[in-house]
Length: 305
Image (cartoon, rainbow, N blue to C red; front, side, top):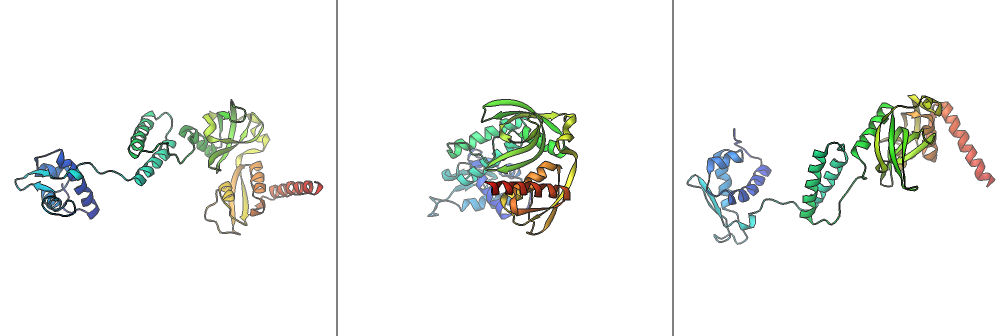
């Protein structure tokens, strides 16, 4: 059933769409036109009456649009300035391009149908706007890789990755245990325990070519990464961006305590020490004691120097 009442914005949009539609459908029946725009014939007649009084400045019969619809069939003349469909502004187009980039980054690589559609729309918008370069708001990371890492972090499971080292210009295959994801200097990184290096490593996500689920080696727990999470408590003395991203803190008042958890004892120690005086580790006491010992050792070395 057609709508009897139209909101002002919806009616304005419909009026703008009516002109180019009528230019290509001259002589269309009023009832058919109303059905196409999902309104009643009475509402469509009111819309046409409004258009009949629109035109260019001057607003004489020479500048106004010439509409005929009393016979039940609609024709339009003298509407060349509105003959084209509505377009978008440059700012709106840029916003759409950036939004498409975000959408594309979250689509797995096996959904080629969606990726093809996004790329086709992106190319059309780029050509229409005259943008000479590709706009991007995210690192060129694979959506499949990002999804695999997120799932591994949540499930406390391992990954087999192919990683391109920019420094060595080599691609290596590694078995890792992802601990968390963090952002710094405009790039996203995966912090993980690497069984190839037998140590903790940080991998730039956009340099990970592939990531698939993998079994964790039996000696995994011996390297300080637990199958069960370790609960710990911190107090933030100052909430810098680094601290907020490191511990995933949002809207926490200063001097307040917060309870967190991690699978890695070493990650807790390193994160607290990297935060300096901005963070105080309250619990567990054994990790707090270990952090204090390492901090004192570093201070002693500065004194010796």
